[in-house]
Length: 218
Ligand code: TMP
Image (cartoon, rainbow, N blue to C red):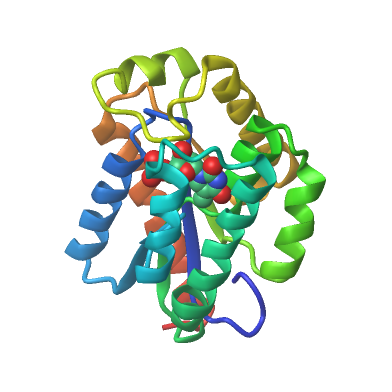
C-alpha cells in the first residue's frame, strides 16, 4: 500500500524513448479487462483536460524555448492537478491506478537529462506528494541508440527532439532511481518480443493484486 490511509494500488510505467511503453500499457489493460479488474488509466504530463493543456505546452509547442526549471515546474503543475482531481480520489476509493509516467520521469528527464539535479526534483516531490510513492513501477529498459532507431519514422515532440547525450543522461537517471528504491521497481528488457514483456508484466500485476486482496482490500 502506498500510504496508510489510501486503500488503492498505484502502478506506474516508465521507460526510455522507443522502449514500447504504450504497447505494454495496452497489453496490461487487456489482461486486466479480461479479468474484469476495475482500474483508472492515466498519463503524465496530461491525463485530464487541464493537464492535457499543460502537456500540449510542454511537448507540442516546438516554437517555445521553455527554461529547464520552468519545464520541471510545469511537470509538477500537471502532477499536482492530476493527483488532486484523479489519482488520489481513485486511490482513496480503493481503485487500481495505472499511470503512464510519474515523478521518476522528472528525476530522469529534468533532474538528469536537463541536469537540474535530483535535489530540486526531490524538493518539489516533497511539496506535491510527500507521502505517496507508487506501489510498483515497471521500467522498460533499452539501449538509447536502439530506442532512437525504433522511433526514427515518427515526428519527434519537443523533448524527443533532444540529442543522444540527453537520453543517455535520462537512462542513467532512471538507473540511479532504481538503485535508490530497488524494491519498488520491476525491470523489463524492452529488447525482448513485446508479448514476452507483456506476460512478465501481467504476471507481476496479478501477483500484486492477489497480495493486496489477501491483505483485506477489495
Ligand atoms: P510519452 O507520452 O512518450 O511518455 O511522453 C512524455 C514525455 O514527457 C517524455 O518525453 C518524457 C517527458 N516527461 C518529462 O520530461 N518529465 C516528466 O516528469 C514526465 C512525466 C514526462
